Image 1: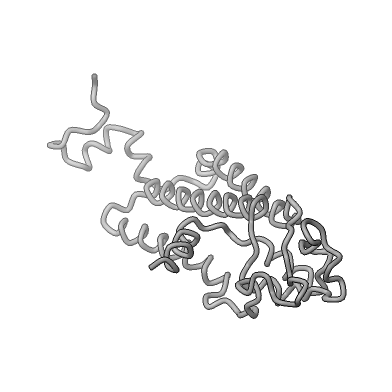
Image 2 (image 1 turned 135 degrees about the vertical axis):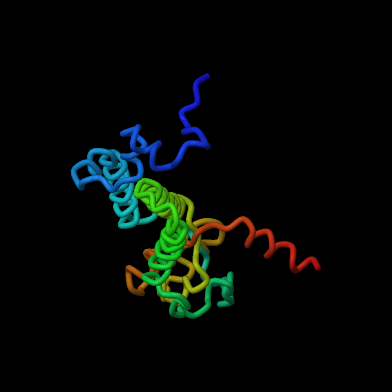
Length: 207
């Protein structure tokens, strides 16, 4: 099998002078040549991002049922009655850091080699990972998401309808019983399920 790698003993400059393909790898292409090389990636990322945004705008697919209080007025799940608090790290900063920090490290690693295509492929891979992770997260939240800890605080259920629910003893309700802000209710209905969190929640009381 013939090796495609240049001989280790050959000077770097002479190798690239004699091989136009290797020279192209280490030179920055024109914008047109770059688009021709990565257009499939750009379209794939755009489609994935558009699908993610479309799913994000939809209401949760299965109707979420939840209890509020027992007949005696006691809250069924106090863990969903926490107040709504602002994010410790804003979403815009999370997005910036998730892209910016790896991108800076990629650029730092290229101080010596300075290969355009190495940077290009690494940045595209980073964007792929972020877009696909976001799409997966949005889809899971939309399909099987649960209640967030502050759900009841933003739902602001109409307590006059207590006892008019569905299920056993009519204690299960849908979002129709909520009187809060629609966007906050939707967000509170789409918590990301967490296996480790569930495991710790179940194990800690036993120890």
